[in-house]
Length: 334
Ligand code: XMP
Image (cartoon, rainbow, N blue to C red; front, top):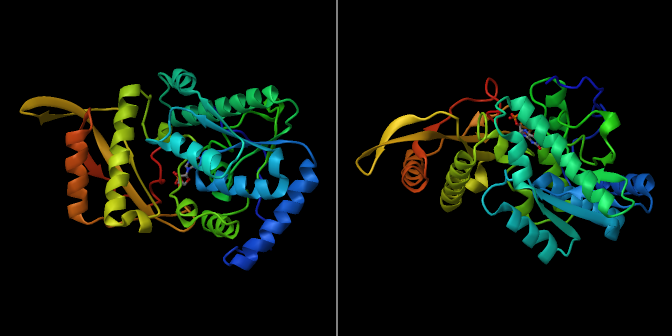
């Protein structure tokens, strides 16, 4: 499938880097005015994944348009362990947002069955997302706008043809789009989004969450996704995160996750031959995700994670650590 050739926006050359609460406040005021001016008293649907970017958009839109914001959380079946439950708890139960939950696991996994090309996978996930939102918008009457947490690297990397980030190159062509996009963070880098999130009053825990790609575990369950391998990936990833929390690395490492490729190797478990997939650990540090370096994880931590994953997760018999910086690797494997 070809990448789209549409013109993508460029960050204004004179835009100051948002490093301080004052600059964040000026950005917030400017965006609130622009959003109000653009959407008037119409309703806006927000794709709320629960990640930093969409959460910051949610906070900004609540300030700008209040009850005219309707959040939708779509579980595409590619979320991390307990992730959707956490989103519902925080936004619906704690922050009182109007939130609709759609569990579309079977729909997404069905469409992805047998699809191994990474760009096709991204495109399928991106297009189906928009369809779910179109359906939701139609159900709720006149909602002409769809807000998204697109940030600048999503645009630049799609423009350079490196990857079709799911909220940019993965969208359908203009004529198929029913909803108009509202993307207030489109010129910001991740570090700037965090400063804006803090200035909006979001918790440290939320604004410092590690990034999670729109296509979720779909780009970490490498090749054609199968439910058993996806489950193994989800469990292994939960162990990695738990161990990083325990030793404090989750506070310092920018992004860390597991990918599981679609091949097996020979091993043994309980004295018997055991063929399983390898779990690949990646832990990277970066400021703007354009380049990245590798975290030097202490060996004892690596050993503990390896021991737990290979004993606790069905289907995984090896753990390897990816030492590739960006470039030449990208952060995600797909
Ligand atoms: P790469 O793999 O391109 O990733 O080096 C750079 C950063 O972007 C995240 N990423 C995405 N974020 N939609 C997103 O919102 C996507 O489709 C997407 N793909 C990658 C990735 O996790 C890393 O933080």
